[in-house]
Structure formats: structure tokens, C-alpha cells
Image (cartoon, rainbow, N blue to C red; front, side, top):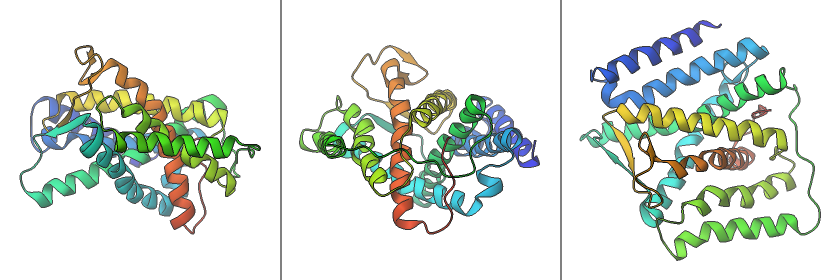
Length: 271
């Protein structure tokens, strides 16, 4: 395995022990620290299995992906803050500059973690990835229009009628809204294989997110109204069903952003 993967494993181990022993800075900064180590470890694992990876072959786009991850996640923070109120943060740094640095570092790991995990899942399901960028076949008829309208309606629903029960439309809306647009523009789109890879990646990352969050000092807590007493770590059990579609939303949102802002070679995602 590449040395940076071993370094990533060391970061995870040190941060995990420090967090459990409540040693700073690891107790308060475990989330961004451990996920940085996770990304390094998984990327090196993908490289070992396939001979290529994000950090080995697409470093420029990886930097773009990490940077894009911050504003993309802020879209969900906006929905949460004003319309669904499903989670909140505790024990964050009092210094505003340090607090916002922590936000940015943590949010920058979200999309890379999901895509790296999707690549790893794909390596176990299919072995070597194709070198060309696969594209989903176009969908004819009224389905693209119907899908786009459904996605727009889902995303507008919590805005028009705010409710903590309306998380599901937020976790589904961007899939229906953006995937037809990406297809129409000839970009990568959701295929059955990619849906499985990303869905599993979302679930894996979701479990690890909640596992690492549970013992951390700076963490998030949930205000989900559905079965709030039935929890695995801090997350109510029904909430785990949101991680697979969230991973698909990460894919559709990033592909759209990449179409608009990225001008370099594009790495295939989770195939």
C-alpha cells in the first residue's frame, strides 16, 4: 500500500485513541482529523486494488472536489437551519475563526469520503475500472421532464411548508432534478452499477460518521421526530435510510457543478 495510506491509518488510530481518552485536540477535532485519515487510507487501498485513484491520478480534480464539498454541504445546512431542523452542533470552538475553519475542514471531507468509498466498493464488485468515462444512456419521452418537475417540487416542499418531517424530500430532490439535466448535457449519470456502488458507499460512510461522532466532544445531535428513542449512536434508526440517497445526491450535484466550473479532465466516479 502507498505510504500515504499507512499514514492515513496512523492518523485514524492516533485520533481515535486521543478522542476516547478525551485528549485535545483529538477529542474536539476528531471528525475532520479521522476523516482526513480515512480518505488517505481508502484512496491508497483503491490504488492498490486498481492501479489508479483520485490522489494518484487526479489530484487537481480532487482538490476541486474537496473545495466544492463545502458549498455543496452548505445547501443542506441551509435546509436544516430554516426549514427542517433535524440536527444541531454542540461544543464547537468559541473563537469564530477557529469554528469556521472546523466547519470548512469537516465539510471538505464529505464528498471525497463518499466518492473514495464508492470507488472501493466498485473495486470489490467489478475489479478494474474502465479507463473511459462511462455515461448512462439517454432517457426518451416525458420522463426527464417529469423527473425534473418532481425534483423541483420535492425541494420546494420544505421551503413552502417547513417541517421536521420533511427531510426525505431534501434527500431525494436533487437526484430527480439534476440527473436528467446531466444526462441531457452528456455528462455522467446514474446507472444501476453506480447506484449500487454509491448507495453502499453512503451507508458505509453514514455508519462511520455516526460511530466517530458518538464519542467526540464537538459533535452533532439529532432532532428527528420519527422514532427518536430508537437510536444507533446518535442517529435514530430510520435516519440511516437517508445515507444511500444522500450519496446519489452528492453524485448528481457534483457532476452538475463540475460541468459548470471544471475545465480539466474528469475522473469517472464510483464505477
